[in-house]
Image 1 (cartoon, rainbow over the protein chains, first blue to last red):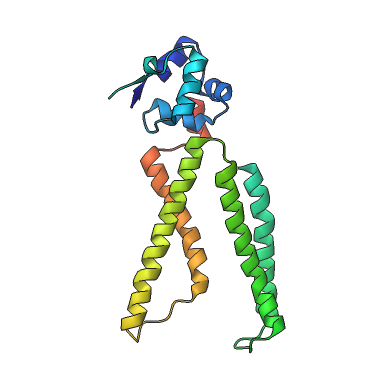
Image 2 (cartoon, rainbow over the protein chains, first blue to last red):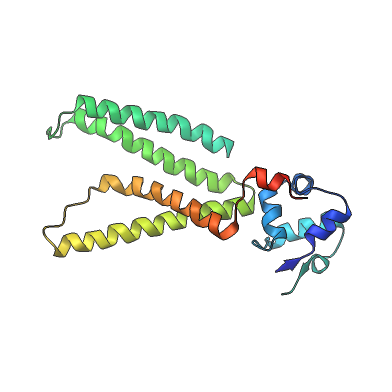
Length: 63
Length: 137
C-alpha cells in the first residue's frame, strides 16, 4: 500500500524519530511503513491519522 | 527488548554452568540415577526458561512491526528445524548406516535457524540498523 507519510512528516519538519516518539513505536517501524515494506494494522493506521488530523484515506492510498 | 535481554542473560549463565557441572560430574555412559537425572534436568529447565523468555518477548513487544520481525524469525527457525529433523528421521528409519541424530541438537538447531531468520528479515526488509535510520529525514 502506498502512503504519504514521508511527505506529511516533511511538511511538519519531523524526523522519523520524532514521528516514532509521537506514536510510541520504533523508528524502524516508521521507516518500513514509509518505504512500503510494511503495512500498519488498522489501529496503528488510525493512530497515525489522528496524529496528522487527517482521514486514513488521505494518508494511505490504494495501489 | 531490554527486559528480554535481562531474562536471557541469567538463563544463559544457568545453562552454561549446569552443562559444565553435569559434564564434569557425570562420567560418560554413567547409569541413570537420581543424581544424574537431576543434574541433567537443570540445563533442560534453562532451555524451558529460554522458551518462556521468547514467548514473553512476543507478548510484551508493543511495536507491531518489530513483533512481526520476531515472529518471522521464529517461523524460519521452526521451518528449518522441522525440515532437517523430519528428513533426517526418515533417513534413520530406512537407512541403517545413517548416524543417529541426538535430540539434544534440536534446540541449538532452532537457535541457528533464528540467525538465518535474521538474515532473511534483513534481505526482505533491508538494513534496519540505527545508523542507517538516523540520517533519514
